[in-house]
Length: 231
Image (cartoon, rainbow, N blue to C red; front, side, top):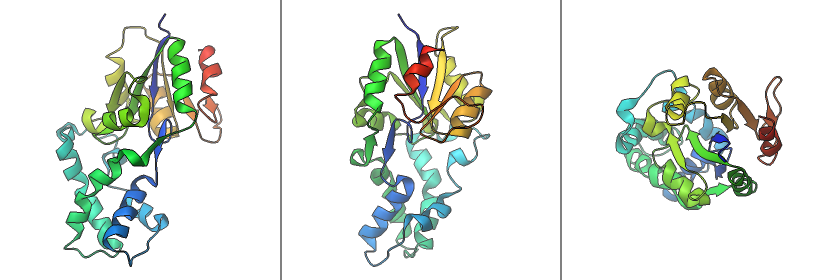
């Protein structure tokens, strides 16, 4: 018997990438300029604006082609490499390397409690759907991480054109579900996942973060199981 649909954030909730975007920048810098030695603290501020999810109120259907999505953020990477000391003439080539480096399957890892929790909830009748502000290649990343048999569908903002916490990001998923389907959002982002879901009328659980007043929270995914039993 189907209990409903669980909407899962991906990065920081089900899985993680070593170093995130800063890690990819540093990997390329290290290969192209071994003499430079910036660290993540220098990189993060340079990436604090310029991704589509930095403007969630603005839809971007024109970027739903994967190549167009990546072209849109190439200037951000070019500026970042130049700011870290790369030659401006080499920066476009280095920016072009980001797609393969960031999406490399060997850099993505599931948390230790992810697969067992999702498999247990599947056995209880829950459907799993990933809803994430992410790159166009997220469906392939989800499969290569080992969730291909567990997660039924993947909605990535790069392809839908809507970023959480925009309510439309959630409504896109709701429109694919049967009327009255029990739905819960689970993620590590207070603004994007919890407030975004609540704004779309979906209950939410905050995970892997310190507790927030008035919010349903769990320090890990195992704790989501007893929470769902009461929903």
